[in-house]
Image 1 (tube, rainbow over the protein chains, first blue to last red):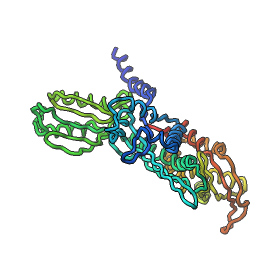
Image 2 (tube, chains in turn blue, orange):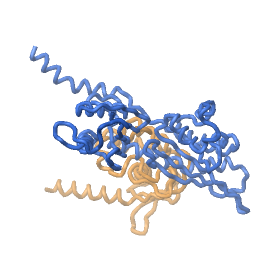
Image 3 (tube, rainbow over the protein chains, first blue to last red):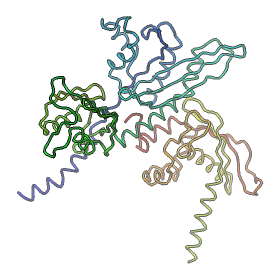
Image 4 (cartoon, rainbow over the protein chains, first blue to last red):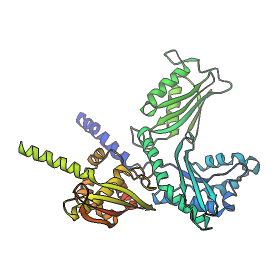
Amino acid sequence: MKKTLLIIAALLPAWLNAMAQDVATVQPKIMVIPYTQEGEDLRTVLEDDANKRIVLTKIKESFDNRGFSTVDFTAKVKAVSQNAAFTADNQSDLKSMLIESSGADIYVEAEILVNLSSTGNSVRIILTGYDTSTGTSLSNKVGESGKFYTDDIGKLASKAVEQCSEEFLSTMQTKFNDIVENGRSVIINFGFDNSSPYTMSSEVGTQGLQLSDELELWMEENAYKNNYHIQGVTDKQMIFDDVRIPLKDPKTGRNYNANRFGLEIFKFMKGLGLQIQRDVKGNTIYITIN
Amino acid sequence: MLRKIITLLCLTLCIMTYAQERVNFQTDGPGVISLRVTAYGKKAKDATANAEMAAVKSILFRGVPGSNQVETPLAGTDEDAIMTQHKDYFNELFGNGRYRSFILSNVLVTGFAKDATKKKCLTADIKVNLNALRSDLETHQVIRKFGF
């Protein structure tokens, strides 16, 4: 019996490792959107301008060439437009609502600048990639078509995209490699319910430490490679604006996400004798202490 | 002792030969890059092979300034570490001449002749299939596919 247990114990890590290799990593969702100026309607901006549609399609094509599918912006806009909540009155916030409702982890904003002159026409494209939850810039590139005696702005636009898309994706991949190495960034927001008797300076747990100290010590232990950053602490709130979590559970090799990390926080808070409410929106975890 | 000296001499010669190749950016387009390479060798055949190898090595480990496709190196800058980590792949690529399958064209610019330092060299415009090279590196897990 002892021998069998020993064999199982010896084989378990190898088996878990093999299991881990079978689990495909969950890839980020990327959406390419057009840049809009103040007052421009994000819903009609593409319908009105064929050149912007060409730019967006060319960028999506670059992702496809690397074997990566993006979230379709037009389809999402149509879905959002059908939602009665998105009226013209609140269009200023339409972009953030659209990004949020699409579930995209990363969005790429594309701006097109057309320069018409007597010495030839040219197009300049500005590409910027952002992490949706943290707002971190992942990649920035400017592409130029060069001057040509042509009125075909669409052709110039696609030339400008071709000029910068490869380097744009390579820079983004460098950031992805960093995420694989150092973990994905999540935001954790600790707050209190209005009726809660606790504050951040309340003494909790068996060590007699303040709640904010307990939270920091726990974060130090549990953040991936001890990588975390505190944005600020007040008596009513504590925000960790950058906590790294692994892409895969180091123990099981299965995919790990913000919700799983929220569960770990829940267990810890329960251990301190606190009742909490947990909400996860994208890569942001909201903890409300009752 | 003599064997050691010969080995050391060979190594020095190898390093010197490798350091001599010069790679400059010509043009690029979607999935293709054209480089002007000056390479040395005892025979024209060796110099041609060195030129093609230098073009591929530049793309992999040095990057090509001015290019829109591979301004940063495709595989990384730590050449020794990468080549040691993926020993079999690079033995096949450079040792068995697999790099040739990524060369689209090799057009001679100047013939095989002695340069100002009296060393025999040639200059050629070499076109490399970047898409195929990247896919190959991804397939053999030398670099990650796009994404996490």
